[in-house]
Image 1 (cartoon, rainbow, N blue to C red):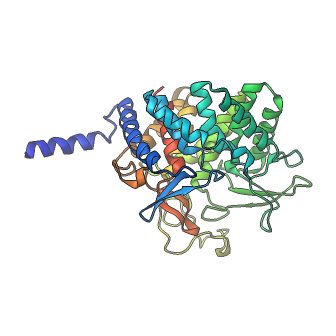
Image 2 (cartoon, helix red, strand yellow):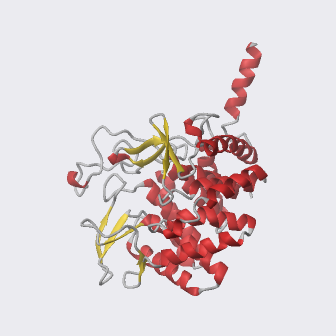
Image 3 (cartoon, rainbow, N blue to C red):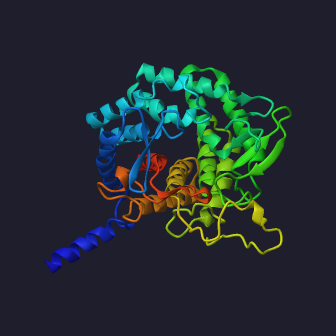
Amino acid sequence: MLYFLLSLALLLTTSCTGSEPMDKVAERVFERAQVQLTALYNSTPEDKMPVTFENGKNKFGKFNGWTSGFFPGSLWYIYEYTKDPAIREMAEKQTEKLDGIIELKTHHDIGFQVNSSFGNGYRLTGNEAYKDMVIAGADKLCTRFNPTVGCTRSWEPSKKWQYPVIIDNMMNLEILANAYRITGDKKYMEIATSHANTTLKNHFREDGSCFHVLSYDEATGEVIKKQTHQGFCDASAWSRGQAWALYGFTMMYRETKDPAYLEQAKKVAAFIIPMLPKDGVPEWDFNAPGTKHAFDMSAKGAPKAEDYHWRKGDPVLRDSSAGAIMASAFVELSGYTTGKESAKYRKTAEKILRTLASPEYMAEEGENGNFLLKHGVTNLHRWDGVDIPLTYGDYYFLEALLKFCK
């Protein structure tokens, strides 16, 4: 009995270290994902989509919520890996629940909503109805474009921001690129490149980190404010924002082969990599109190107290979703570079993926509300979504593993 227990302990230990081949890591993760997300599928209401699991209960959101496309997208990724027809049927049913989303009041995240679900469905099945939805989603995103500003607008105007553009918006350019591939209509890529070029010009600091929110004057295109909404403070590097930037410019290089986008992705990567903890999974904000790179708030030029989006005593938490997004971007970026640079990006992705696939971050069967990853953070300073699973964390984790093992 003692020998059995020691052998089991050794197996569990080695399964989470570098000795486990990455194809076996992927196999283990997708087996778990299939069990977890099948159970989540069975508990999801017909008129909702899974969002998270918090305070012992699953939370489901409306179809026009920004995360609504990620659950069907995760099912498509599981189908891509397993080729299981039962999973395909689940993916189709969850995707088709979003059929009416174009008629709903939506926002810039129509890209997330449609490309993750219908876009993956079209890529894997060739279903013409899915193709039509991708084009319709791209058309709807185009209506948010202001040529004077040069960007698609993120949120609606408010007292706080006249024409807000968030770094997250880089991700939604992918549906425009997808629509261009399908139709050949240049308007989609013209808007995508305009948005990317304007973001490259205005959203970044010299060190390669980015702001979260910029407010533009919609009449002149001038930048009015550079702030955060979910990070520690306006001057800090909110980790998921850095992940969106890394992924977004890597994706734009894939779609255009413009070397400026590759250089920007590499610059963002050069900022991120030294900031990562030893295990590779980032803190929710790289400069928050308690992190290795925390601001010295007593130093000259430090952010003022009124600029903090944080409360004394807030914990230093990791954000598994930011790690998953970064891992997916680093894998892809490694394919666009060579030599030591490529190896560095792939090694960073592998480190993150191995950590996320460990018991510390990946849920056991039946736990975590049947989501896959634990320890995500949505908006710590508002205490909104703190140390919880996030549907987009699962999505990008599975995507990263698929990319890594191709």
